[in-house]
Length: 246
Image 1: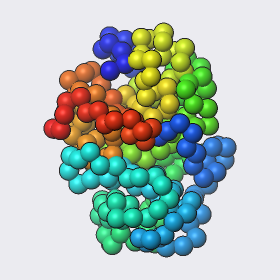
Image 2: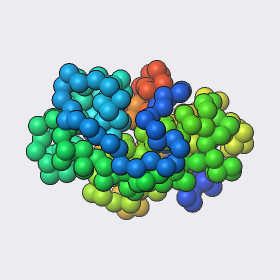
Image 3: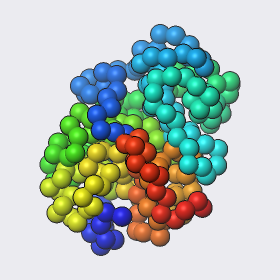
Image 4: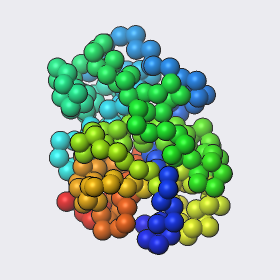
């Protein structure tokens, strides 16, 4: 996709999601705490808390392979309700599509105090040279927020794979670093909305198949030496599943 397999292999060591300048609620300062849900959310609701709910359930976009995504628009519609139900079922909650206290508490268990998620850290997503979110095609705060959104999709992917560890080899890249390794000039990594993954003990084909249900609109072929995922549709780009629907 953005570099040759040998180039990618060099990056193994240590991974990323939406848009230009979409920012989340007060999570960019690095001092966030559990989100303060103040009401039960149902279809028809709207607001910043609905936006945050959508970010957190975006990885539960479909039951089977489908080019489907949860719109992060702050409007609680049928797609959001369906994603909530899938999330609830996966975590042993009543799957009623209503995001009440039990569901909100479960969502908060996936959040670390700095706004990252339970199984992924911001340090895994920063540029491999500078160690920051600076120098890409969006502001550092937007790239970090995009990485945060990617983490929630990855939490869903990890859960669907059986709670196995997922290694992030490459997340956000600065323009300079991306050029240095031969990345595409408009790589999704430059926006913080892409990640290259390694899941020890799990075939890339399986990772690809599960990722098809997580709202990822960019999937590199599963025959590469890693699995690339991204959320390019959140940037208004066309869907791209290199191996098609598997």
